[in-house]
Amino acid sequence: MKMRCKADDLNNRVSDSVRNERFDADGFWKDIIDRFFYSLLKRTLPELYMEADINVKPRFLEKEFRDILNTGNPEIHKSAHFADYVLEVPLKNGCDEWILFHAEAQARGGGNLPERMNFYRCLIYAHYRREPTALAIITDTRPQLETKKYSHSHYGTRIVYEYNNLVLRELDDDELLSSDNPISLVLYAAKVAAKNKKEYQKYSYLRKLSGLLAEHGWSTDDKRDLMLFIERIIYLKDKKLVEQYGKYRRQLDKEGKIMYIPFLEREKAKELIQSGIEQGKEEMARNLLVKGVSPDIIAESAGLSLEQVRSLAN
Figure 1 (cartoon, helix red, strand yellow):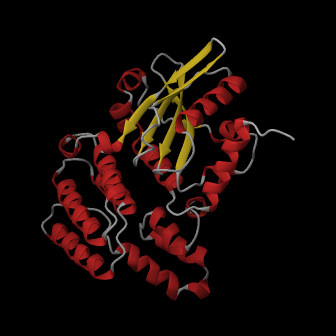
Figure 2 (tube, rainbow, N blue to C red; figure 1 turned 180 degrees about the vertical axis):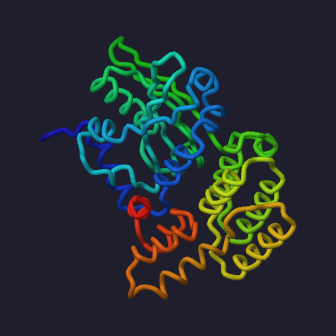
């Protein structure tokens, strides 16, 4: 009988999770990293942030990561339960640092997280002789006995692998809401989204965060994108509450407190897509891009991938 190794078991768990996809955690966290990376780095890895060249964007090592997984299938990262990336961060001294980034969006399942982190670290070192800085963001509760590090002992050989953990449920709400770091609001939104599933609860948090965001002195672009991320993870579906929330947002606009794409733009986009099916999804997506609608909203409304929408903008 052929014994299956732990790597095979892990890859099988990845495949099972892909089949059970619900929320695009992969796309959400990748967009967050891409848009607010250095804010996230300052919050989670301040020592590395001090050495990073924040004038240069980090690079997603997607090809390198697929290579170490020995697969050309990018869908292995499109799971509702976790998102994994390796990024190359430029440093002020001309060197660079690799970050193994993991976002865990599942509570009880998803296998052994410390084992997963160690598995990827070993693959990166085996292929590239690089020891990455590792960060795991835990968005929901994990099994009670699961540790925050990997350890293994075997006939006198002992391995201990400790990595950075940011556990959302352990973060202080007041500190997140009073922070001057924009990523704190996203982390707060992800935290409340994990534990509040009822529509009215989500509506209440959306109003709270919209009002709070309106009071901050961040740039219009930052406010707009932050609100889009917040609305994306605290996804409101109830039509009556959507209408109420839209009225609240419009009132903020009238008061001059907030300037970004209205919440109901998503609903308008859906209507435009439906009315323009004969013209083709891509043509309508191009029109929406010209109107300034976010690629995230267009992809969601048109049934296209974010990559497809972004390619239409070129």
